[in-house]
Length: 173
Image 1: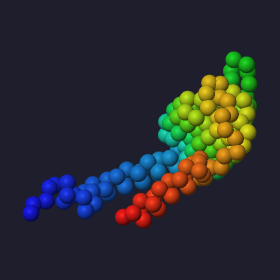
Image 2: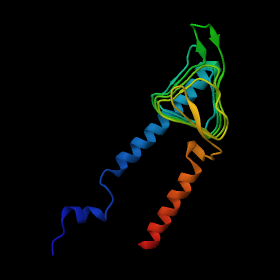
Image 3: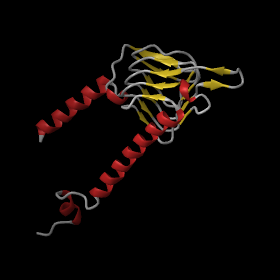
Image 4: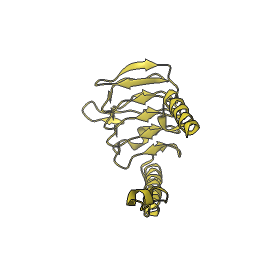
């Protein structure tokens, strides 16, 4: 009986898995080097465990006003401002621990985002966000409070649900 090509490849690892691992390692190194560069040369206050996308824009007009906490993830296209030249404002913008800032969000100067918050994609945050909340929209409003997040802003409930599904799938097989 002959096996199809798909059956042959199902049981052996992908030929180019080392390329994927190398690409992931390279991207991780770039993210760490960028964070080091922003802290060392621009004077931003970025915790060593925060992850900032290479395509995120952090304010370089007032770099010492940007503060990002431990375990926070800033995704691509996010703009974090610490100045407003039209009002001649230089303010500190703070993002707490274990937060997730969604793609293409804008955080305006002087805003404080509490610990364990999730900011939805495309949101414009104009006011302070209380801890343990989900905030979405333009202007951003709190839609849910009392949440818990894990490292990198992953919602605790979603993590536990995924673990349960994985354990059920493993038990069936």
